[in-house]
Length: 268
Ligand SMILES: NC(=O)C1=CN([C@@H]2O[C@H](COP(=O)(O)OP(=O)(O)OC[C@H]3O[C@@H](n4cnc5c(N)ncnc54)[C@H](OP(=O)(O)O)[C@@H]3O)[C@@H](O)[C@H]2O)C=CC1
Ligand SMILES: O=C(O)[C@@H]1CCC=N1
Image (tube, rainbow, N blue to C red; front, side):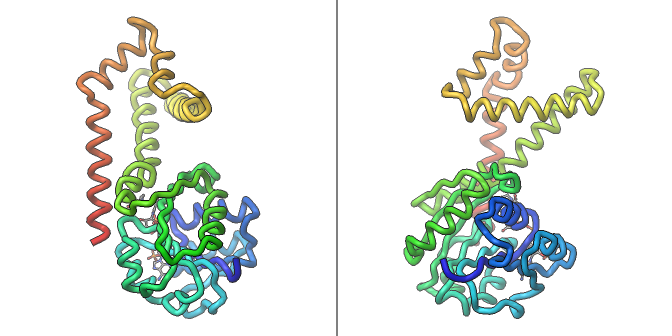
C-alpha cells in the first residue's frame, strides 16, 4: 500500500485504534500522520512518535488511507477538507450512522470508501471491528485496511450496509453496557457488605473470566450458564430475578433498539 495512513480525529476511539496499530508493529510511526485540533490530544498522539498536525492544511498529498474518526455531527465538513485526496486514498469512516452515500456526496462517486464500526477494547487488541466497503475499494486497499484493523482485534465484514446501525448498537456501544454491568455488580456487592475494592475486583474478574470462557469454550453461553446453576442453589435464585419474565432480555433489547434508532438518526 502506497502512502501514509492519516488519522483524522484522535479522541477516544481514534487513539484506541492508533495504539493498536503502532503497538502491533503493523504501522510504523513514520508512516502515520494524526490530525487533531485539540492540543492535549495532539500531544498525546505525538508522544507515540507519530507526526501530528492541527488541521488538514498541514497535511501533504502522500496518503494511502484516511481514517475519519470525528463525530458524526461534523464528518461532512471534515471529510470535505480531504476531498483532494479522494483520487488516490481510501477513506475509512468510523462515524456512527453516517452512510457511504453521504460520504460519496462529499468525496465524489468515484471515491473508495469503507465504513468501520470499532469499539474501545481495540486499545488493547481486543476490539470488534465490523467493515463495509463501497464498490470502489480495491482488493489491495481492502486487504491492507483489514490487516490494520486486525491488529486491534477481531474483524468481520458485512455486505448489507443497513445492518451497520444494529452492529453499532451491539458491538460499537456494547463495551459501555458491560462497563455499566461491572459498576452495577460492584455496587450490589457493596450493598451485600463487601469492601469497595473487593467488590470491584470480584465484579471485574468475573466479567473478564466469564467472557474469556465463553469465547474459548466449545459450549454455548447457555450451557456455560447451566454449568454454574446448581438445582435450587444460589445462581438459580439470582437468575429467577434476571430471567424471570425475560426481564434482562427485554431491558437489553430495549437498550439495543434505542442505540440502533439513534444511529439511524445520526445518519440523517
Ligand atoms: N467512542 C467509541 O467507543 C466509539 C466511537 N465511534 C465513532 O468514532 C467517532 C469519534 O468518536 P470519539 O472518539 O468517541 O469522539 P471524540 O470526541 O473523543 O474524538 C473526536 C476528535 O476529533 C476531533 N476533531 C474535531 N474536528 C476535527 C477536525 N476537523 N480534524 C481532526 N480532528 C477533529 C475532536 O476535537 P474537538 O473535541 O476539539 O472537536 C475530537 O478530539 C464518532 O463518529 C463515533 O461515532 C465508533 C465506535 C466506538
Ligand atoms: O456513542 C456513540 O455514539 C459512539 C458510537 C458507538 C460507540 N460510541
